[in-house]
Image (tube, rainbow, N blue to C red; front, side):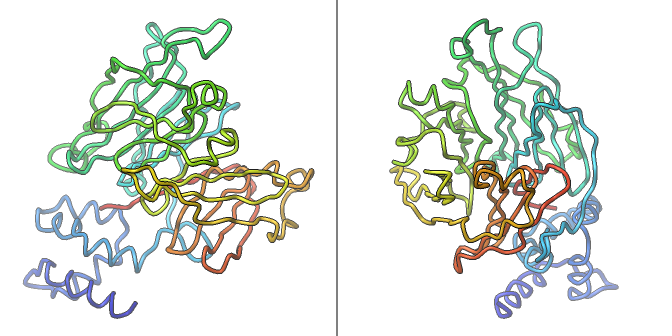
Length: 372
């Protein structure tokens, strides 16, 4: 590991700006100590600074030295923002795998840049034309165009008896050239909403997973069984919906699975029987041939549940677990959200758990990449 870090440092020093007063070593040491917010400010000073702090070598080194969370899972930096929420709905965090995060509630959509602590609410759906309630949001970054896209699904009309009979629509908002040129703020980079001619074919039933330039959702189980289609995808570049062939476990049980992105691949977390308290993890190994492989099985029976609330542990405990959100924070370790208020770390190599903790407030998390 030391040799690898030294190699990266050597590459960074070759690229570092060397003012007359400071050596490359000193400049590197200064930049590595700065927060993401301060690095962004430095990048606005000159093109040389911008080129330097945007260097992949620098980001690789900075991430290895300054992770976003410590070994105890505590955040290194934080900020608060008041938002409007519907008390009957959770707040959903949707990552872009770049600088920005999308925060979604029932009737509000926000874009957040954690490093700059910038928080912007996007315009609402036009209630005079469509239902104002958002029924699914996708978000992602396109490096080839240096732009983000927010996709928001909605009902094209009011449903009277059966929501499955209502036509669905989708609108797109583009965030272009953010942090480059004159667009230094999220608001300055946003386009208006535009409605696509072709909306989504199905209702969705889970948080999205962004992989390979497409956003993927679990299709609502009743509709999935009727149509024999289980995973709906949206290509951010072509702006077209398509159906992804599922793993065998999904077709056998369309109710008890969730989609997540880990290591830049699409995974299915499947709970075949909640009483067994075992979660199987399937990975889409070949994105072109749609080859799924079961990679891991996580046995929650070995977790000491003594610190969890007795109401969650009642009826065997796992019935209450919410394992939708699984985050790969290190090469061999997952951060798993077990309920609305409990989290635990799981080591894929040793098959062991650590640091199960109960939180006083409901919480959510998502993957965030800090690109200064």
